[in-house]
Image (cartoon, rainbow, N blue to C red; front, side):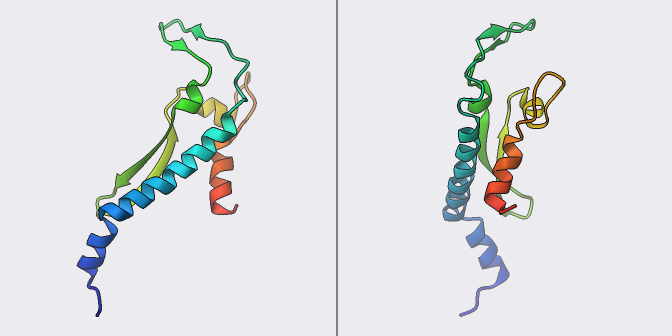
Length: 112
């Protein structure tokens, strides 16, 4: 019995596929978090001029896994950091070395 395209698209957009994509995406996020553990432990809590209180572990806690439904109905996973320092942590700055946690994670899961 052959599946038509419409049935296949429904199956790929179903709850089981979404759950598996989210599960795998969470695995990727956890790996990224694991790379950051211990790196920023020396930091102390401090308050920015804006009033935001920055605490050690903010970057690790900002790493999120989520699924996104594309316009065509397919599902994709996304892992991202919502910490405002994520760009500096990834690419470095004049006051911070390049850590490249996201790139290391991508490389780990894509074999290069």
